[in-house]
Length: 386
Image (cartoon, rainbow, N blue to C red; front, side, top):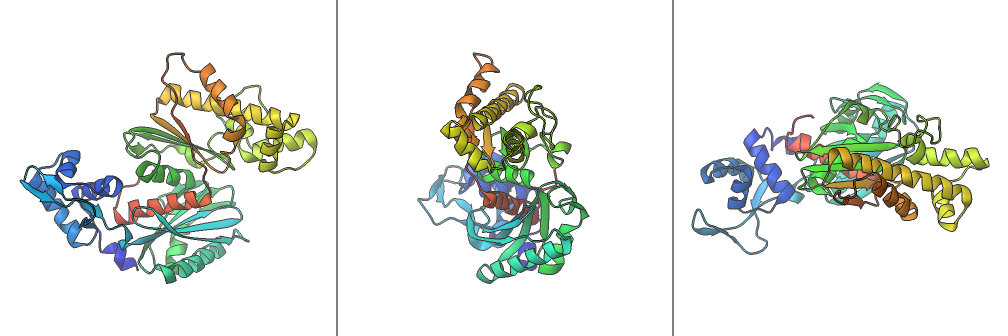
């Protein structure tokens, strides 16, 4: 299976640019592709020939042929052979492994989840290998594996630190490669999600784009010039020091009034439990706020205002064309949407352009898909590390 991925490599920088343009925006006519990349017809022909011969690109038979003005003849558009290779994406949480199989264009074609009853690295690698074997029986053309982990990841191979798994310096890529024979890419889960949304999702075609996630923690990803901007804190618990309200609540996981204390699922649950003495789920708190329970209304209202503050601050300083709100905690918007909007308006100039805020109801399979996209980028197209 490793040989299948290797048959496309290495791509030159020019071939890679062509492949990525068609992958993300195709099918494209040769004229359109040359215009997008600033290439002559001859240069484009030279770059596309090996990609077609290797089976990565194909002249699409779907739809009408497209006119090629420069050459004076009709031509079929170029497209990626999306089903020619499959990729596995895994998202590891503290108690589950969520797995997906995707095409080269990141469409999910299979899902497979298993409970995680240990955090011992060798055992986790064993489980990932078992899941890979089960998925490979139905999808034999696997080209690689991407793994998303909450925490610090080095060289897209080693989990330097993961508070959810209590890991330090775990060579996860090597452990899984030894057991599967497939190339493996490991990345911080938020970074992987941002890459997937930039290439194939809400940020496709946008030069300035932000992803803000709410869940077990707070995640943030910034895209400038169409590329994700790496930064140190994205792997180390983003939001613990981003103060949304200096007089806000203090929780064990964040500074007083921080995004983590006010917005994360554990932070919201802690606040309600500290006030009532009862342990309740996030869904119960949202339902309680919707039904008018005073404590839930207060906590969720403050969370909504904190979220609006973050969105306004991001908009004021980054000026993104869109902010995507994602993660397992986005149900907050259904209950506290008005509080979010009020906080945004209060902290933006009256003449400022409206904030383009998109909410994506997502589950852990979306995070796993993000890991698969990293595998596509690195293992097949050979994109450089950020």
